[in-house]
Length: 150
Image 1 (cartoon, rainbow, N blue to C red):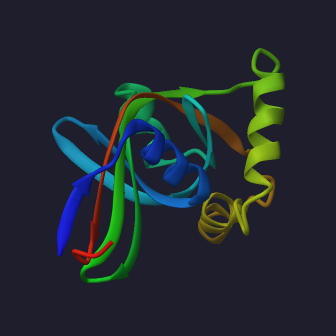
Image 2 (cartoon, rainbow, N blue to C red; image 1 turned 45 degrees about the vertical axis):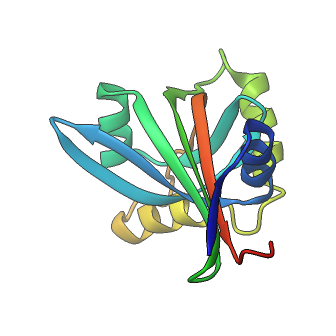
Image 3 (cartoon, helix red, strand yellow; image 1 turned 180 degrees about the vertical axis):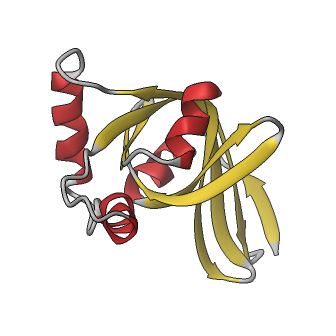
């Protein structure tokens, strides 16, 4: 097996075609990692959430990371880590960017499921307010493993 670093373009292309990753945030030296559906658009990752622990933590500490993987076998995989800054996209200030985020996310299968489904299961309030956010990418790095012939 050979492991090679990805170029910035390879990282960006990879993240653009994947829609499920893991968001990492931290508060008071305690990490928290959870799955998110997302859409990538150049310098940003867009997501949808509802208010809860991750939002509380990211408001307090906006430094976050997103890990995106594709595992074909033990010896064939790709992994990219994005480091960046969390930012909520409230209306009306970010109406255009929210619309763009929604447009990008709607191209993804079941993009709303994690955020809305979890909250509806935990709450009797069926009027759950969706919260659009972005992660402004500061840095990106990745690795790809494959057979020597790849």
